[in-house]
Length: 282
Image 1 (cartoon, one colour):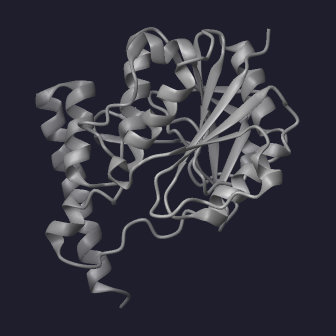
Image 2 (cartoon, helix red, strand yellow):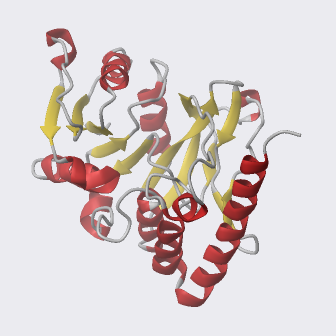
């Protein structure tokens, strides 16, 4: 039997993005779903009456950051969800087609006891940012061999094995949360909590795959920016490469000794990026 899908996304002071996502979800061909928006911005999103069908808005505090906001939504969902249901975690700034949810559900039917992620497309260039997410142990880096490729190179109906999954469009069995717990809001308040959760689920016996037919588009933009001082560049919680989150993720997943290697290489890459950005084009 196809699952009821509880779609969960947080939003923080991006009302147009949140409303756009809700409209895209309303147009999905797979219809057995509801939507939970955790609004933890400084002012409530003004959803229109037509957008409120199937939608539950959970107000939360700005101090929760991404992970705490997600857990606030999960606690609401898990209070009444059945074990055969699933949770779709997604960002509020993505673009999806009408068959997106159906592709994820179809992949789940072919992959029992699995977390099923999506292929991410950079809308600026129309190329893949990632599909399969694999840990390069020596380089201490999560990579995708499909990065930079055309979406046409993905196998139709394929399920690509992954070591970790991003929450930018991932279908997770409700049972997985009940088996391994929620996201780690205390140690990973903003970035890498999705990677750590998926690694934890993998250790508990769940498969991690990317559904080649499920695509999320995002304007990747410039993710670094060397504004400010070096310490802020390395430690700012709002940056995806900040070193405290990198170390905690690596320590929780791989243990202390490898976490030091993982963080040292990440720091070297960040430092090189900072220097190059500050130097600017020649």
